[in-house]
Length: 246
Image 1 (cartoon, helix red, strand yellow):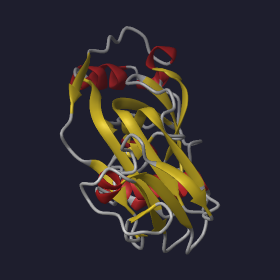
Image 2 (tube, rainbow, N blue to C red):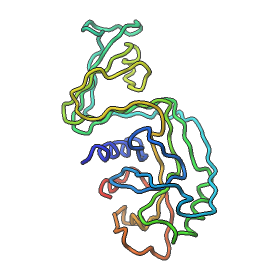
Image 3 (cartoon, helix red, strand yellow):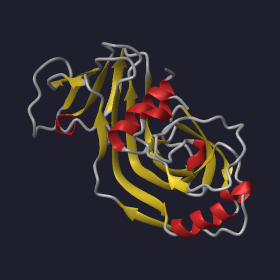
């Protein structure tokens, strides 16, 4: 499995949303694109496909924790840089080692997130269904975006990979890699690291006929099939593992 699809599978299972890839990439409600192995690929905007639909977008801070660790991800005891034990509450430069039990393991944190949501989605759905013949096969619509003031992600390149984190002892004690001042100083993980700000998670809508959501579970269908006479534009269930195969 490719790195982006491994990351997507972890994010979808743990957080229940589709990931922005790469994290922080420019994407907004009203964007359209395709899904490949659970990864959204932006291709344009809603107005490129259907006309006369005005989006009402709201922004609201969220208190929900936006973080997770893959199973098998562990952290060493915090110690002062140079090897001495670190004491919580004492402002010293410290470090700890994060180790991953499997290839594709993820450590992810995001702080001060805002949900950017299409508020009139019912009206948008109805308008798209009325113009479904203009909808491009395989396309999905971004209905919500989680934007982080700061995020950090580490993805392991192999089982047993590790990365050394350095920063204030109090910040490391929270094991929040998105905290300001925490940095990765060494790595033998051979995977992927990124931090910054911007979009991190997506909610998506699509026509259910493309994924056979009408009863038997999500099953990939050929995008060459003709559009059925009746479809429903629905919110896609990110946790469904069948998206790994699309």
